[in-house]
Image 1 (cartoon, rainbow, N blue to C red):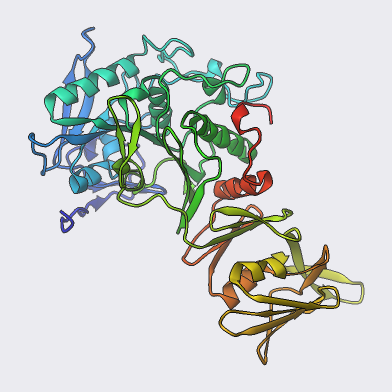
Image 2: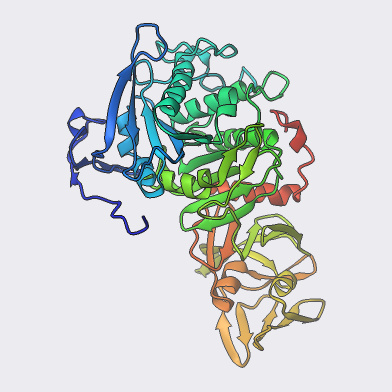
Amino acid sequence: MNNQWILLPGTPDDLNRDYLPEKIKGSDIVVNENGNNSQPYPERLQEFHEDLLGDGEPGCWYEYVPESYDPKTPVPLVLSMHGGLMTGWGQCIYTSWSLMAEKHGFIAVFPDAAKNRLWADQWGKWLYDEKESGEGSENIPPNLDASPDDLTKNRDINFTCALIEKICEKYSIDRGRIYMQGMSMGNMMSAMFARNKGFLLAGAAGSACATFLSVLYDENGNIKNAAGPVPVFQSRPERNNVPEDIELQKYVNRYNKYYWMKLDQCDPVPEISIVGENNFAFYKGEKGDVVYLDIKNRDHGQTFDDAALVWNYFFSGLRRNEDGSITRLESNIPRKGDAFSLAFAEGLGKAWHNNRVEPMSAHALRWQKLKYHGLDGGYKVRGEYLCVPLSYLAEVFGAKYESQRENRMVRLTLPDGRVLQFAEGSIGCMIDSDLRSMYCEALYREGELLVPADWFLQYIYNLHVSECGGVLYATDHFNALSLYMADILREALEKDGKYEDYGKIGFAE
């Protein structure tokens, strides 16, 4: 199976500007746009229409059954819910779920929303305070019948439940391994299903659009839920812009994450792994795990490899037992933080080291490197650097620390024998008998000598460093820190890993 040819060539239609034109169906046309790269229409994708609810209104869905399927062996089932104004077949070609189904031997199903290509999602307010601005129930799209409290008549939920039963009767399905994923409005749909029918699922996932907070919490800030714990994977592209205000996005993302962390009884401090543009925070829970993925420099929607990440990191390692509990299997890719990691946040006296919060003897300081011009003392900023205490860097790397003149002169002897010497106000660093310039001068603050962290980590230890939102992250492989992962790191450092108010999830901070 590992030697299968999975990716197939397609004919680009770069001049097309129509959204999901019907000519794609059954063709080899591929559509390319930022974050939404499609595959050719799969030959094994089949379309079905049937009145599963017995009310005279046939529903539509698409099935992908891998070539390896054997009715004698129960297989997992993944339902993938399309975005607003999309279709089930559109969700299939814009994702890699059919590719993963072929590669890993599960069945993938792509339902259509009942009306107008729009799911009957619950809508509400981004903020609890009704006086605050934000989309509200008055903006519910037409023909959606979702009720904020009673979803017994929600056609999309009822149809999805009936479809699961249909697929389980039609094929040999492992009922302990049924999963759901959605994109944008489909993310809201999969989250709504998980909150109300999540006991049918071993895991739920979604990309892009978060859920309105007034749907998740009541007026007292208490969780609203009818299904209990569900392991959840949330993908939030850095340029998602839903809602548009960045600070409000941070707030909404945080409390969407808190919602499931509370239900799944998660440790509030995650393990963090940043692999290229993919920024993972893995939260381990007593009732189920939560994964938060922030994708650097990606727009609203889903990346083509989102299905591969969800399956390999998450769904492949989850099973729901008959008693409702969740068993962690061995996922294809372990959910573990980076083996080596180091992070600092501007203005904070704590550091993130190997997925732990550690104290420093001085606060991380943002410093501007200046170039002066002319007799009038004008200057230009030639760089900004996050400076951290040498005493802490010595602890991290096991260096011998020596100082003179009240720490204004510092010497480090590294485990490999190199000797470094620094002095207040000097941009120079002596490395054995060699002199090298740092990015900016050494600073003396709070009785400690500070140097630019990125220079020390890159030049002395050849580590990969990225910076975003006033947070610097370093590890031993390429990484691109994203805006909302920077927010998670800053939050962990500010709260010192204690999260005193974590059990009071709601809107008051």
